[in-house]
Image (cartoon, rainbow, N blue to C red; front, side, top):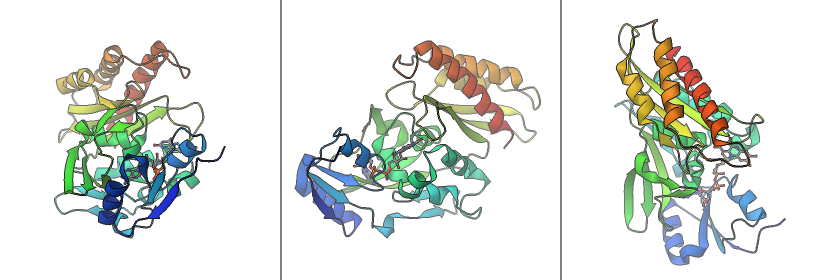
Length: 290
Ligand SMILES: Cc1cc2nc3c(=O)[nH]c(=O)nc-3n(C[C@H](O)[C@H](O)[C@H](O)COP(=O)(O)OP(=O)(O)OC[C@H]3O[C@@H](n4cnc5c(N)ncnc54)[C@H](O)[C@@H]3O)c2cc1C
């Protein structure tokens, strides 16, 4: 199918894009890489009357490692730019971001799709959404009245729904602190498909390699990506270096037991719980090797 008719507007800068959105009202949508929006328009699941194209705004295409240890990513940075970023930009502290990109679709999608587009789209299993929740990313939105920073914990409201207002664009994603012992893993029926369940873990290790705690995030088990406080409570018990296997098993069981995943055409709730258990255990073990 072809998209319904729409008017095309090319933004000259980020502030101009926000002004255009405010002028055009609820019938307007931003287009960045088009890798989610264009298929939705082609299937007529989305029928915006106006498209505001921000794809040419180089000012939003950057990756910056800051002196305070944070990493700033411009919203128009592509998945592929992260995947191929040199060590000087994405060092060991953010390797999980680079490694996670291999799970995102296929190369042609990664060369056009953007970090900001992924997060604004708000798919519960999307790797960027999961990483933002896991690592407490700060999401900077720009609207006609200026900028505001939204913590990832408050950004994802539900099924493809976020805290962004219709006249706001996402301009920057900040990961405030390095996560050197983190891993993301997921299961999809075919490589490159959206995951049925995705999980991510970031471990807090002590100087001798002992586990002192950690974070666990789950995608595909609720309308938005979520942290698992129950699994994190298990990790907080800790384990000496070399004795973490039981802790990781208990953590994976806690994550699965506490989740209330949906039953749909991709799998039953019980199937998803099995995936959570297996994937959280794998992610813990992989994070430990970092
Ligand atoms: C076959 C296929 C497989 C895929 N597999 C995966 C996968 O495994 N994992 C995954 O995460 N993604 C996957 N994707 C989607 C891909 O990652 C997209 O790049 C991403 O979801 C959206 O980024 P985009 O720049 O293309 O956004 P667009 O498609 O241009 O926009 C998506 C939505 O976000 C809004 N938007 C975009 N940028 C902004 C902004 N800066 N501010 C405010 N709103 C904005 C748009 O209005 C639209 O609603 C897949 C896509 C395809 C076609």
